[in-house]
Image (cartoon, rainbow, N blue to C red; front, side, top):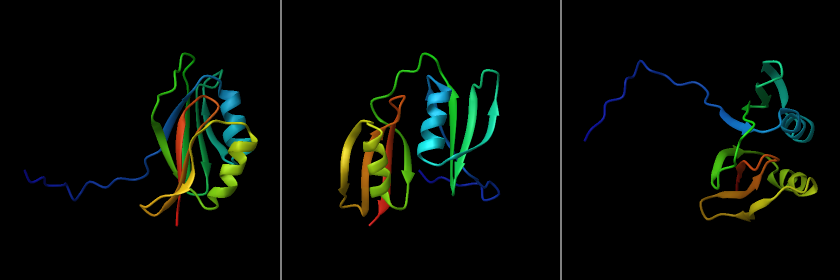
Amino acid sequence: MTEKHDVALRFGRIAATLPVKDMERAQAFYVDLLGFRKVFENGSPVGFMILQRDDAELHLTLQKNHKAADFNIAHMMVENIDRLHDLVQQRGLKVVKRLQDKDYGLRAFVFEDPDGNRIDVGQPL
């Protein structure tokens, strides 16, 4: 089966949306620890937030009954992955897959944010 792609159609950014049980706790983690900045919030109390850092954009959505998935829900490419790994460990977060060099050309690890969302992190070797 051959698929034709509409050449007039162009995609822009796609941002991961992470469900969180506690917006203030999530904001403290992503803003205070990881250095994202809040560029948008909606609701009172806040039910949705957009965070940015460098070329990354992350959306947080308040889901009081959130149960974390047992698979990775976001992938982050970073520079200085060892520093991020240190921050995650200092914060006492769960590291699901240890930091290691992969045969597919990335140094990578997986951790859980304060809401249990699994984040896969990579840096090109």
